[in-house]
Image 1: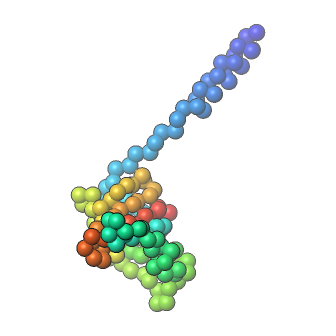
Image 2 (image 1 turned 180 degrees about the vertical axis):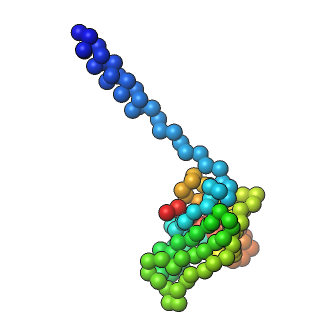
Image 3 (image 1 turned 90 degrees about the vertical axis):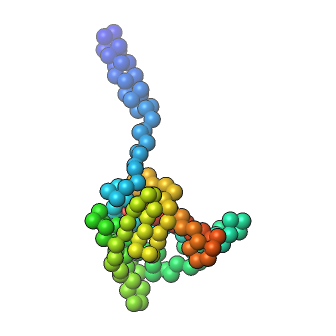
Length: 143
């Protein structure tokens, strides 16, 4: 009887522990947490607030640029590494990046207001990207 009771307690404990919800990872957007290597996974464009959103990743971004790596170093250095399929000429680039008042700027390549960051996916929007009233939304995923 003691063995059955012990076994029941062990099984109950395991079941209770496995049913606990996973903790949601919270991540404050700052230079330290944003630093890392990313890949651009989505690029959406809206010409006006009422126009439909266009998928620029599928239609505008060159195939050889879709696998590039964007490196945000904690010291403010920024680079684009022409990884995978290399463009001709290669699209490697070095510069600087900043993050201040929820605004990110990757040396003019991509910049905007951070919409969300969960320690792995960074989404930000740039208003007036090409013309007044338009909006460009970029999604980068940490590698």
